[in-house]
Each structure stands twice: as C-alpha cells, then as structure tokens.
Image (cartoon, rainbow, N blue to C red):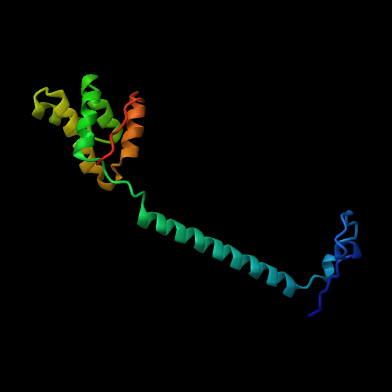
Amino acid sequence: MASNFSYQLPESRLRNDIETDTSPLPDPRTFDSVHLRKNQTHYMYISAIFFICILICYIFHLILGTNETPPSDKVLQDLCGYIAHGKLYAKLGRVLGVQDNEIQRIKEEQRDDLKETAFQVLKRWRELKGTGATKSVLRQALNEIGLHNVQLKDDP
C-alpha cells in the first residue's frame, strides 16, 4: 500500500509574502508509513549524534579536569595565621572533610601550637582529597566558616 506523498507550498509561501498562511494542512490519511518512518529515523540519528557529542564533552571534562593543582605548603602556611587566630582550624577541617578524631590527634601531637595544628589539618585535607584539594574548594570552605575576606596567595 505504498503511495507517493507530495505537498506543494501555497503560492504565498513561494513568493515569500508576509501574509498568514491559511491553507489547510495535508490530510493525515495521505501520510504513508514510509514517510513517517523516515522522519522517525531522522530524529533518531539527530538524537544519537547529540548524545555522542555530550558524551565526548563529558569524557574531555574528566580527562582534562579543571587544571587546578592542590595548594602548596606556602599557600597553606600563609593561611594558618587566619584560622589559628580564631581557632577555626577544626571547623575548617570538618568542612573540608577531615574527621574529628584526626583533628584531635593532630592537635594533641602539636601540643597546642595553633598555627602548626592548623597547617597539619590543612595538609591532612590535601592528602585525603588528592587532586580534589584545590584552591577553589579551599576558598569555598573559608566562605562557609565566615572568612570571606581571606585571600589565598598565588604560588610563584
């Protein structure tokens, strides 16, 4: 039951007039299943290509990452004065994902040297998170504990 489907644009469309097209749509009963399958196949190909593009972008994102490296010891040392002064090292450590028992152990090992305790908590965070320990993560954690004005110094 194959029939040839053809539809010719009205004269107004061919002349590119700005008038509203009031011509009726083609009768759906004249639409054959071959034409419908061609459209479905066309949309499937477009969807597949779109999905592949998204997948490729995601893979590149995973491979390339953010190009941000973990903060150096110097950056962490410069920060210690701010977080040791208000005894915020424990709060910052928790926000960064360091366990309370590890923070307590570090505090006991440093015998109340607050700057060194803060430094060791930050180093522990960097060890735990690896490449996920970035300056942007540290900035966000500083904001969460209320240190909005602390600037991280860039590495040389």
